[in-house]
Amino acid sequence: MKPSEVEASASRGAAPALREAGGPGSDDGQSAVAANPLEIRRLCKSYTRGKPVLKEIDLAIEGRGITVIIGPSGTGKSTLIRCINRLVEPTSGEILFEGRDVVQLGRADLRHVRRRIGMVFQEYNLVERLSVIENLLCGRLGYVSPWRAWLRRFPQADIDRAFGLLEAVGLADLAYQRADSLSGGQRQRVGIARAVMQSPRLLLADEPTSSLDPKTSVEIMELMTALAGELQIPVIVNIHDVVLGRRFADRVIGMSDGRIVYDGPPDDLTDDHLNTIYGGDGWL
Ligand SMILES: Nc1ncnc2c1ncn2[C@@H]1O[C@H](COP(=O)(O)OP(=O)(O)O)[C@@H](O)[C@H]1O
Ligand SMILES: [Mg+2]
Image (tube, rainbow, N blue to C red; front, side):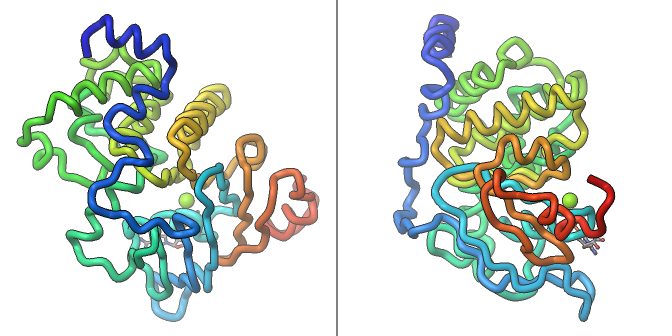
């Protein structure tokens, strides 16, 4: 992207940069559009036989909006999110993403589905010694070996798009800086831009603000929800900060001991619900 185009893109706001290389309408051979992009049915996960971490989770995610998952540490929030893109292998159940059961997919199909599921990580998962722009281009998803990706040449359209996205997340000036020279907030902006780079149809975020200070946490949540709004895709975010979660949620899922014990709007979440989710009382 030439400087004049970057300026033009910036003056139009983030949306054009996001949509340049295909937004939610773009397709690469998958055309089945389910009523809900994501439906989880009777999902169980045990890391150790006889000790289930997820217990018959049923959850349908609509086409847009921010779903925030809250719950005590160790209750299975990360496991749930990671089952969706099979970073964790489910033990049983179905995970229907755009009508296909992710649990049953072979490697090639899984790679294809993963391209459509953006993931933002708590610890960013950047390739530290590569520049910001290289991270966008080759660290795709945080699943792909950077060396494998790095050996490929990138189409000019991808490069233009990466620069447009850096502009959208406010990092255009840092394109050639190494990732390890950035602050936590800047790193997470790269992590978000990288997730959006692949034109996802679903965005997952596992504690994206846990390593950040409160002000930066709010900025990161604002950025993520704004981009998801522009792309018109749903977001599922695990967050242990209830106040922050409520502030950005359209829907709150409360988990306790591997089950969903609250599912509703943030405004309906009462202290009683929080006591059910987190256990005990007197801590509120
Ligand atoms: N890779 C793993 N191997 C074995 N046990 C795990 C693994 N990952 C998580 N667990 C266990 O599963 C439970 C849920 O963990 P997790 O999904 O990380 O919870 P949360 O994100 O809510 O803190 C915890 O008891 C944790 O120790
Ligand atoms: Mg977790």
